[in-house]
Length: 358
Image 1 (tube, helix red, strand yellow):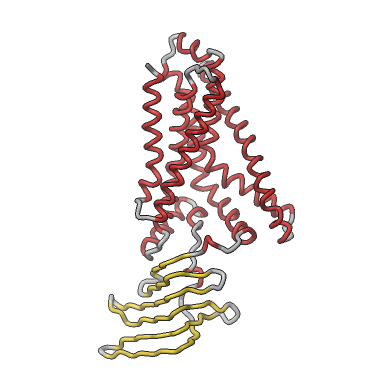
Image 2: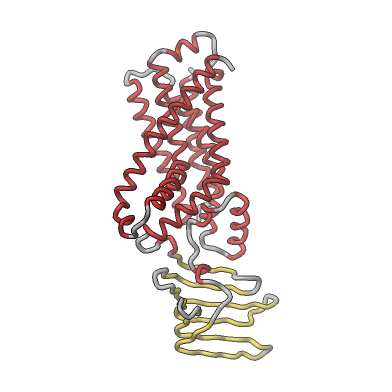
């Protein structure tokens, strides 16, 4: 490895860690100031809060790694440019592509580590982080709110509810269908269904049952009817963050189950899986873009490059969040929602590189 490569590698990683250590503690302090009353309300111990913030660092640090890489590369590359070091490097006969090589190598290292941690380490941290949030910090458990749930409970049984209220453990416009060899054998309707914790049973209001025996149809109805079913209340209230808590193999299996059951959250789960692949690619794209943006010496110096970099970072975050919302709230394909921001910024990267190389 040449002196130039070692020099850039050292600058790259030192700037990245400085950026990480600068912004993460700020995020932690801001979060503490917002949640300290909740910690006191639940009388949480220091170890509980510490464990939460260790998970907090993994949770937010993972998603912000591309931005940290982007800004750190702009920072130290702008310093090289201001000191005319890049001009000296290129004037010595080194091509621009060769100059880019150590940057791409650093990007590959961080991308690889991000990929492995995103597939197997971060999900464990996400689980404890989200469970803590749900248990102590969620005001009304909105992450369990669901509407228009149609789910296959097992091979023959299907359940549908139009909406679910997590605070009352109650679902509305409930129907339960039992099939046998693709023939409907039994169907239950009720205006609402409520889980009674103390009795471990379901209470149905305006209960109506239609059962088919041969050519006969038997009808049963009651104002209030208590019964049991072969599904749990959690089947009616799937948590939206569940996919984030599963490793790669568990997530693939989970998506297949959700697909078979007709889950309304399927698109969000597929989006989560795609994003675990797009995030490492994002790091590489933003690394190259940052070098292209900062390599030319400008009158505004480091400040101008950083300002431009921050604007681009916010644009990327905006597009990323926009397409994520479109996937969950509309019929946008999860693959497009996950990969389109990368394709857009890849185009921007090639365009700026073309200008810089002239």
